[in-house]
Amino acid sequence: MKIFKYSEARQNFSTVLNTALKEEVIITRKDGNQFKLVPIKKKQKKSPFDIEGIDTDITTKEIVDVIRECREGSDYFKDKYH
Image 1: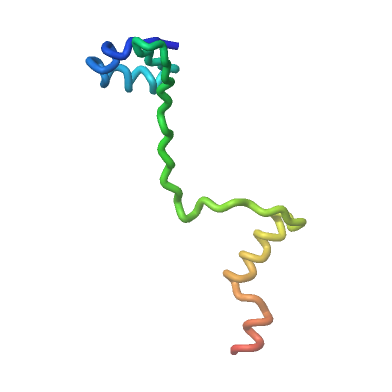
Image 2: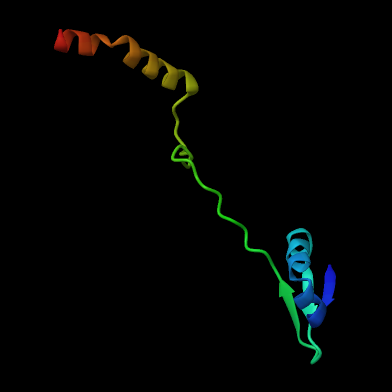
């Protein structure tokens, strides 16, 4: 934790902000009031592919089998549309 006097913080504002990124910063005024400077974390840009998972009873093998069947064309679709 780093403590700055108000006048010192005002004169070296950039340094105070950089310090606050690494550790807690307290700014103290002459009247005794203290303020804690806390950085606001940026929201990371989410990819459209970042989705929450769901719980299912399906196995990885079953998923792979379904995908393979779709890629190769299932007998159901071959019979129905050919």
